[in-house]
Image 1 (cartoon, rainbow, N blue to C red):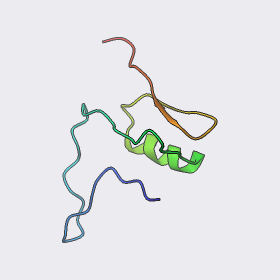
Image 2 (image 1 turned 90 degrees about the vertical axis):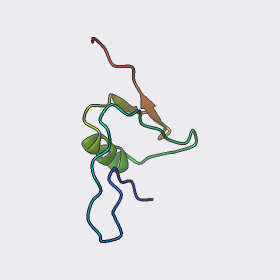
Image 3 (image 1 turned 180 degrees about the vertical axis):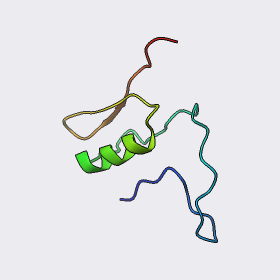
Image 4 (image 1 turned 120 degrees about the vertical axis):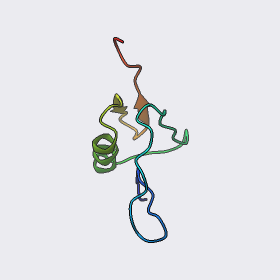
Amino acid sequence: MTISSRPATPSGEAAAPFDALAPLRFPADLRLTPEQFALVCAENREAVLELAADGRLIAMTPTGS
């Protein structure tokens, strides 16, 4: 499985970054390895994420405003 936050354009260049305020959406049955989780976190630094023991991705509610 490949996880990417910036899809490539037909010319091979990275597309414009996604809106930082857009919510992350994942299928309910998605399971990640710790390595894949680290990649997702590195690309989504503003998101508060946790990885459950069974590999489920848990998006936490941000604190503060």
